[in-house]
Image 1 (cartoon, one colour):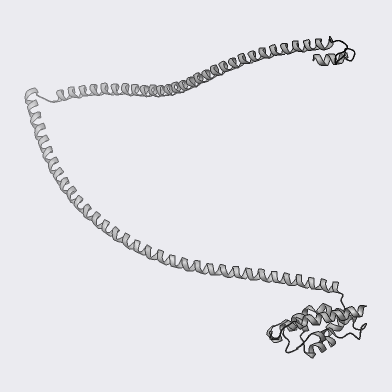
Image 2 (image 1 turned 90 degrees about the vertical axis):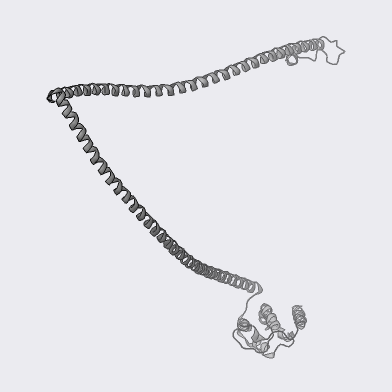
Amino acid sequence: SQRERERERGRDIGRGRSRLHAGSPTWDSIPGLQDRILGQRQVPNLCATQIFWISHLKPFLSWRLELSPLTPDLPHPLCHIPDLPSAVCEFFASSPVATAVQLCPSEEAEQCQKEITRILQQHEEERKKWAQQVEKERELELREKLDEQRRVLDGEHEETLQVLRASHEQEKEALTQSFEEAKATLQETIDELSSQLEVFQAKMKRVEESILSRDYKKHIQDYGSPSQFWEQELESLHFVIEMKNERIHELDKRLILMETVKEKNLMLEEKITTLQQENEDLHVRGRNQMIMSRQLSEDLLLAREALEKESQLRRQLQQEKEELLYRVLGADASAAFPLASVTPTEVSFLAS
């Protein structure tokens, strides 16, 4: 009956509970567990294994307490759990969990599944939050490290820049000093050469003046007044200059003409080279076309020979077919293919 099944189930639960060992962690050593299971009700001196069994027996306890008005003679299920304080039994007997929870096992399982999904979602959200926080902390740490490295590199760069600036300034000062010294020596040599040139020019001027005066005096003594002589010399010089100018103009014209001819020759040479290249390309194309025409003619001859052979073979096969047809049609009545059984359509089929 149903009462006997309930009693057997209670005995099985008691046997399973008897296998729990003593010396497990106390009720107070698991924070938050007694509040979740017993609803903020303080029950001292419970071990963790007893709490585990209570949490797993909660659906059965709810179902058993729901049936307790129908089966008043059945003992309470917690009575089969050894070493369980009587306060826990009294709590489950008088707790709102025992009286108010009137859920069937399917609804309890659905509620547990919803609770599990909620806890998993909460855990996933917390994990994501922690991952984001860890990522932010890592990013901050990396930024701090990068800032530190940047500061170190900036310091090193500043030191090397100062060293390079100092060396550059020293080199600049040395080069400036050497340039000033070289400039001073060159200026001295220029001044000395300028003075020597002035002295030399003065001497040359004096010499020229003396030579011209001497020649002029001699010319006067020989030819008299120099005015007529100088006029003739000037006229001759003008004539020579005009001739030279005309010659220069002619040479300029010839030079321009030669430049134009040279440009035309260059253009013609470029055209000749392009035409030669085109001619070579045409020769190559002509050779290729000749080779292709020869190959095509050879292929045509081979195709003709093959066609002739095929036509001969076809004629031979036609003759053999006609001979076989004649033999078949000319056989006597005792042959395997009598003449009466062959129709004109079959004859045409055999002929084809």
